[in-house]
Image (tube, rainbow, N blue to C red; front, side, top):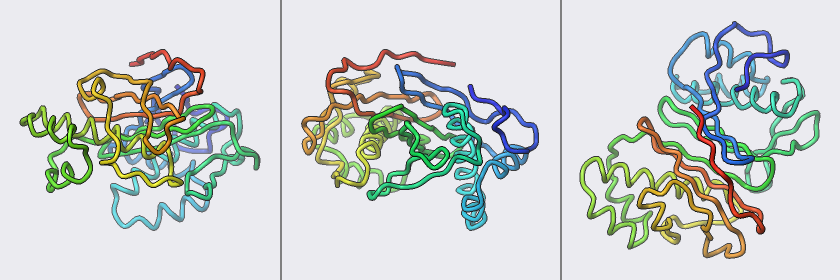
Length: 255
């Protein structure tokens, strides 16, 4: 777990609000605690660079401001720890399709990352190479859920949701939703993907935690590993690109 070391900016001493949540081979997923905490938010502000602090100030509501600040500060701390650079050397840019990447000392860093947050939970996913996407959602009953089901899911997925009731239906909905979102985020903005045009594998829909054989119809040559990261507190999923010769990653669950 990264901590406040020599690469930290001068900031109030406060416990880390992030920890290593899951490790699958070279893929790491960190959980970020986004509950309100004045000391944490002061520490986060000290990690942000000038542009990020301006962005922080422009938020009109406390919750999205806190999501941005705590998640970005945690990302900075994690990347500094893993890349061996100082916070002042770390910067971010975006590709032509809008996907962010990190620079250390002006050189693109050998790491891919993705961030998601919902309610009091944030997830940061990192991998040394290849594309990666992560999504987290608090399981709350939403208005218009039936409309979302009709427009975002395949006929088989809709049939399974129609046969589920109550809490089982909510859990299945968010399991499918986070998996689809993670896959779309992994691909990035260079390819338009209709969520109803691809189907989550049957085994994963049924509760299997990991699938290493997912292919998009639009990208048949690329194989993706798809994992359900959900817990009692939230639904979550991660998707990342596999090397053509890879058999998938062994999973290591951390507390």
